[in-house]
Image (cartoon, rainbow, N blue to C red; front, side, top):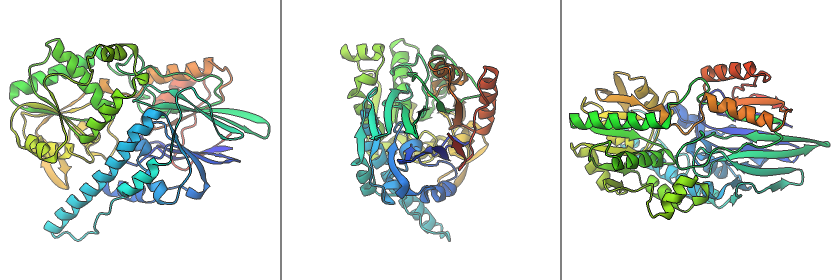
Length: 468
């Protein structure tokens, strides 16, 4: 038995890990790679997997960098089960179709632009269609937290709450081969403790091998009170300039967290009366799914719902679905807060809003999540003087503010504490593998783990194999 690290190895995108057993290959996550448009397209077009060898797919959560290549897998012939929590299945049902629609819309737009500018380049073709996404959704099997499910007579799966996004799960695999048992725990993306809306991450017992994300292995997040105050200050000074605040946001979880924070700030009178728009049909659908899964909420959020005080609604908030409304919002010069996907500014309606506001110093781009290398979001974080939007270089005059406190990822303190908790519940944890992180944070986290008495973690590059 071994584990082959196919994606999210020394990078934070395209999560894919193969657990290879005598019973067949089990794929942990199947995410899209996000980065340079052309590079991403080429990497995602050719899955680095032998589809016929895979007997099961286990999805940790619905974010596209973990789930978005599943329709590609199905397009290439996969017909086996896809295991997830019920909430993740409901979210994937809308997110995968939305990913297909965005690919088709972007392909049409870029091909039109190329034709207008008489560019000599190949036409862009979507990676997969809505039909591929629908076929993938039909293969999902929902498994609630804490229920053991047998994938084969000698391999079982149990999900624990990862506390990262709605339905996110820590995958616990129990594998028996040649009379020897191994327990593998894969964190997916690990959440933070004491965050609003969701429960804290759960810790499995008896772990032999821990595969853990390491996104923020080199830093600590600001506390919740500070991130709310920082957001309020951003809105105040932009409003005083008569500008717009555009918040690129993942439609799943981050958008809901920002809405939750704005609701609280408005109720306390800490922000001016300014219209807030969630410009994302996907976010509207996801927020409706949130309302269907109170089993994932913490006690405070459940109490709000029971009191008919929705955490995702307040008087100055509007959810926008139609393209005409979105275009009118982009064209308007009035102050507003606009929350729009995608979170890394690589696709979707946020690109149109950024195009409209980026060259005006009255406006602000507020970054509230991790931005992978080679994405427009990362170039904004780096505060480059010029950025390319829809293939055109533009002067960046808008203010850029980075609020890392809103991250749904565990920081260094959380990651170290989680590894220690897994060890304390076992005492014989053999190996730790660090995935879903860039090399610099992984090096820092690896050193910190060694200082705390752990064996040097395995930090795989793409294609590396960990023998068990």
